[in-house]
Image 1 (tube, helix red, strand yellow):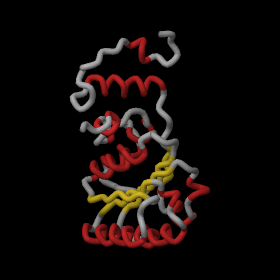
Image 2: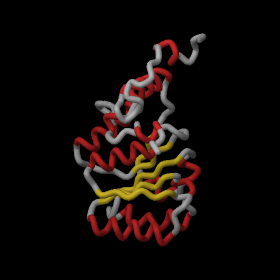
Image 3: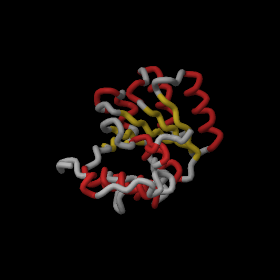
Image 4: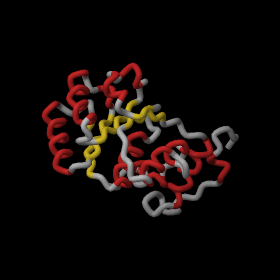
Amino acid sequence: MKEPLAFRMRPSTLGEVIGQESLVGERGFLTNSVAKKAPVSMILFGPPGTGKTTIAEAYAREMKIHYERINAVTTDKAHMEGAIADAKLFGHAIIIVDEIHRLDKAKQDLLLPYVEDGTFFLIGATTTNPYISLNRAIRSRCRLLEVKTLTEKEIVVGLERALASEKGLNNVIKVSPRRFCLHCQT
């Protein structure tokens, strides 16, 4: 069975990310961080489906640093401790915590000393306001970066890529540009 189209088209580099110019554009914060080989801990926040976790993974890959992704909804303390132990083995590592707002205070506190001492860089992804959902100690050690909803033009770029890409629909389906217009009459 083929993977879903969105999964197949998921960007693997920051350059493949659509939109988010302030983060991944030519002068974007994350682009500059990669160019300087200076990883940072961060919280990516924004609406669902905007690419927060994808951006986090692309950033980790481009930094060429070992990374591990955990989901705050399904992870337990033992799994988190395992990820921390792995990070210690690699020297520099990134731990990506999807749905970080779902970590209770004790689990957030578990991460804190390791983020402070540089054992790993933390990248949290959340759909909620980090000023409300995360404790101050974690927030103060991370850059807060907003991931915005794509514009209509950016969505069209994504659709065009999906239609043309070998990983996508490989030009099997032809669509007129008018069909992409969200405001046009068909």
